[in-house]
Length: 97
Image (spheres, rainbow, N blue to C red):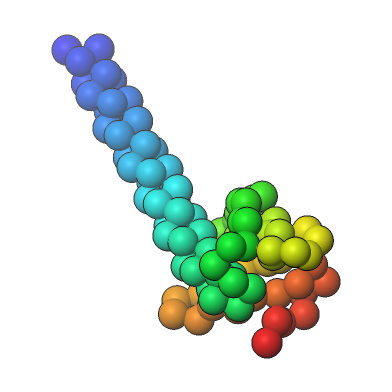
């Protein structure tokens, strides 16, 4: 009886852990999509964009991007999303207007 209870509790924790991991990855995926659209709007549709990293902290998702605008050299950008606000920044953290 105790083995069944232990197995049920462990299965519950596993399911909760997997669902939390899935929601984290989907929010990063959504943030990447928003940042990619913003980069293409600012630098052009033919800009190559690669995701280089992401982190979440206090409701803010930060996505690190490597971009290569057509005819230009590679740039590293950060894109921070907090709620509805999206800010593109250069490598030093200065906002790109």
